[in-house]
Image (cartoon, rainbow, N blue to C red; front, side, top):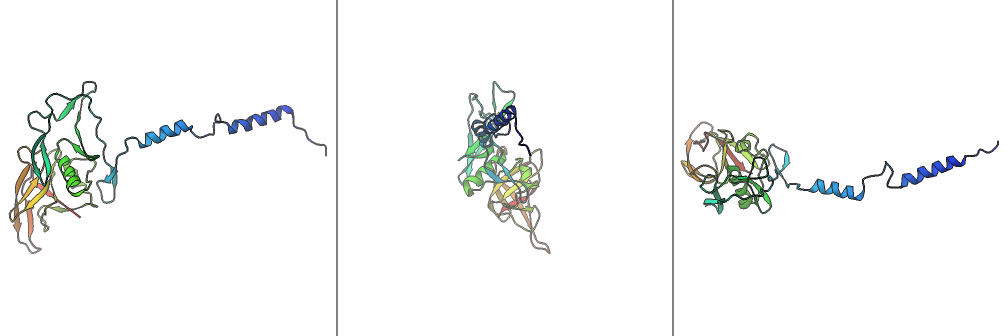
Length: 245
């Protein structure tokens, strides 16, 4: 059989394709080192720490603080009212405290984030911010949930950290429990710091004039055992308490 010959132009074309496949200009090559670095930086930039979130088995990142304001209004100051077990309770209704920073070059305004030892505890000085900061500083636990309204801690409790007990049940509140009321737009939440025969003492933030509140506790005998009913808390009836596991 006569040998077959390949034209010079065909050889030239094949060589060009082989060289192109090994060069950076090939459409099949991966991203450049600069692109890879940019992607890695974008993926890691501002990544929040992983913490427990609402639900039995769910984990969510802690919501990051809002952008840092670039303008500090005159007269802004943090007003400490008292402490509970060494954890300061602040007042966000006191004269001289601006609840929000007005930012001249941004539409609207931002709530003021509070960060303790690198952990975002919430917005100054909401009730949820206090219980999150209390558990972070007192127990070393991160309990912040998303969304962060007080009522959400009862509606969607973190069952990895807490056991919910409805008000009026057969389990008494204990020191270290979170008392929650779901009334109003956002509800209210505080830390039980004392339990007596007919009252409990609760520390909370953003309840005007009552950073430390003594709330009635009614104990009634029943066939199932004693029942425990806590009185109204800030925004209405107490829904119940979350006992730390």
